Length: 270
Image (cartoon, rainbow, N blue to C red; front, side):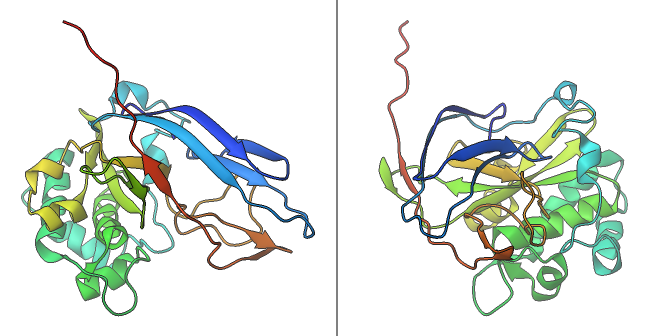
């Protein structure tokens, strides 16, 4: 998807059946295909993406009724309730703060100080804020679900972002998994980017607050997603891997591979 830090300059879809490209309510671009049962083949999507470091999205760009409208990102989600322990944490960590900016920083500091990045056992990776609060560990989805819940519980809009990490020292290779972050709405600054899980892993807390490196490709925004055209199944917890249905029933674990290659940037003459 496009934004101030990312521009999809080319998009090529190769498939043995016709396809269409649509956008959902959050502005996510979706390739949709109806695949007859007797048709064999492979879907390939190639894109040329230009990336820059992520900084705040100006309040002037967050027009009402658009995917950047803060009011779209204020309600509870199926795995991010805004009552109970989440509400209590938000109230606890906002005591003594003045204004949204101080509250957001307090919530970020709480998550980076009290969560541990780990993928052991069961339950992690679902972005279940209640589970993450009780377990105090998880992956990036879990870190950011706690943060988003705390922020929204105090009336501060926050967005979930997910995509693919691009290793800074590699020119080409397979992408083994996803990575996510979030943005909080600050009236004076706009959509403020942060990455609590990467901050924890690197212990560079300040470096991942308010500005993020260009070592990532954003894929989609939001939770509880209804695709375009709508799927027959339940809203998607988040959207990063291919989603398929057969006779209206979701298919588990659609096979997929992801590969990246860096291209040289433009030469600047002085």
